[in-house]
Length: 351
Ligand code: GZL
Ligand code: ZN
Image (cartoon, rainbow, N blue to C red; front, side, top):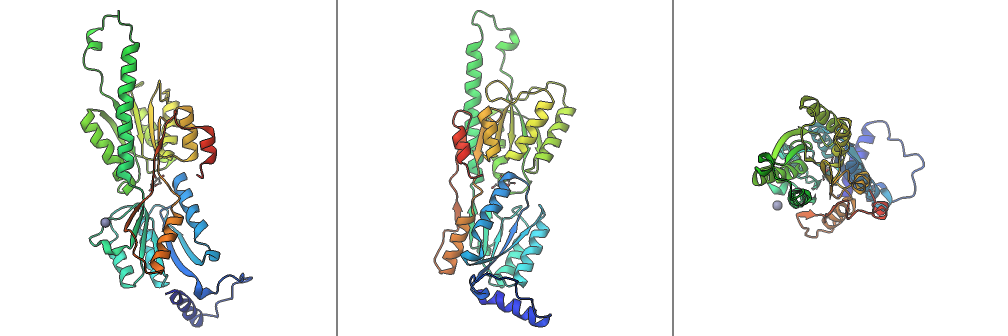
């Protein structure tokens, strides 16, 4: 298996001018001993993504027996498809794909299958006719993450409503308006990259809760998992809304969107505060989000684990050894609130 890449390199070298020996090559394992991994990463859109890339680079090193061919797709599926075709030509031993979206992979994964190159999906997944087009999917259960968020939100909103009712002086005769049905919960939804597994799972949970609870979805904005886009979209929405439009919840499908949304909300005079202001919900639980959670600016930080390098390497070891492996591998994830996050917990977080 490994010799293929070396042979391809040699063939190329013989065809062209002799390929210059790598200056100062360490005495690490000879070329043909290395397992060659072609890796296509989505981009560098978020803190989560940067941590995910770092986790991969830390594991796929020469001294661990790997040659890593790493390509950044800059948020474009066509770049990922081009990278995969290049890896096939280079006859890599394995392809590791972090797929930006779920659809559009059948033909290029079929080409990898015909080239007998196993494909490992990391983080998000793909929807393909034939599941045999990939060896394993290692990532998060995004539907579960969304469910964690909305279950917590339902509970929290009830508590806050009860606290408000108890706080109301009993002798005050409720006006007709107050006695009438309480205002529905007003929600602004910032979605992640449309069509990505993370967005689909997190959105489905919110949309179901909106139906079940009768919440009012003020807007669904495409924040693209980035701070900049979320800031623009939220600022635009607020500029087009009547001043002081009541907003109870802003549901951000990742932390970088929450950072942008909070900036736009505060610039428009809103207070983001779990107890007394806008309830901001976010996903990833990266360090900066946990700092905002400690302050109460983020009311709920749902964890999404980017440190998938070791599990990916373990899957390759199992495939090398011809061992059977579990096709879908999910990482454990929890969530944080201002009540549970602490300064030392933030200190200890690896990302
Ligand atoms: C989730 C991952 C998402 C993160 C975002 O596993 O796909 O993409 O939630 C990242 O931060 O951009
Ligand atoms: Zn399956």
